[in-house]
Amino acid sequence: MTHAPENFDYDLPPERIAQTPLADRAASRLMVLDRATGTVIHEHFRDLPKHLRPGDAVVLNDTRVLPARLLLRRATGGRAEALLLHPMAEGEPGGRWTALVRPAARLRPGECLAVEGAPAGADVMVRHERRLSGGESEISLVGMPPADLLRHYGHVPLPPYIKAPLHDPERYQTVYAEREGSAAAPTAGLHFTEEVLREIEALGARIVRVTLHVGLGTFLPARPEDLEAGRLHAEWFQVAPAAAMAINAADRVVAVGTTAVRTLESAARAAAPGDRVGATAGWTDLLIAPGHRFQAVDAMVTNFHLPRSTLLMLVSAFAGRERVLAAYRLAVAEGYRFFSFGDAMLIA
Image (cartoon, rainbow, N blue to C red):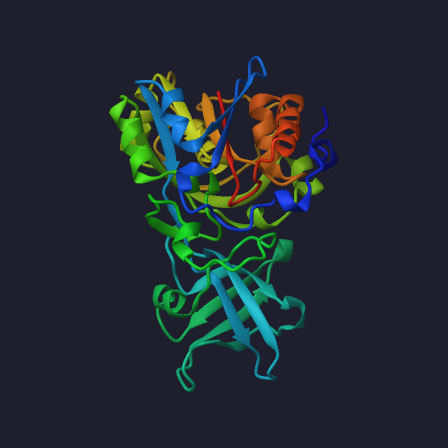
């Protein structure tokens, strides 16, 4: 089967796109899909623990979304903005970043733009260094440490299909978010509450944390050239030694979100014989599409993804394209909420 994006399309009425999070994170609906039989059960997310087992490793991505959208002003008075994707220095925030900048085509190399909200004369600015391939730019943050600049003047970068304002930025963070570095939330984790996490541990499953900083691919459709080459945009990830040990000792590995899946399957490349994953860190450009042989993941929790997206391809690789698209059609008919603030699936 070809990996052409049109083979991962489906009809979605605009009103099914969730614009705001629910007041209770765990009140989201949960579709439980048996990937072997196609059987579907309709639950709520707070019911997730009853579908888990003692000996499971429930793997969470502990990345935290940066307030990575900066509103800018050119010396001419024109408006611009930058969405920071990741620091140029591997794994550590610094002054130079890869970013999506608008309008990049109009900006000169070395042009400085003032950061909106900064006091006059503070010299807090973004310098557009150069354009990179794939629509990205290299920028420098000038005038104060990057973490302080983003904390004071940055905005949470919501996906473009969310039009409603987000009154509480913490609702676009998981309750276990810890390591800053993402341009978008690992949205399957948005449904968890502290109570759900305690219930999972009480039944004898283990919570394991890994990190993948979500980057450019969240904002772009699947590109034919990437699919043909079998690679995706690179994102920084880490599986620490203790996490690798817990995952390798588990009876079953339940990945929370496509970012955790991508982290684990990338870490499988570093696994010793007989292990699922190895302790590793670095950049991964792994594209998971139908035909991928899963080495680390036995079950996954995931949201409902955009048509023609690489995330939908990943889920289809795990459960089968026809089975997944049938589940999506059912979700539409049953009134499920879609995308970042929408409902969830458990595929096991």
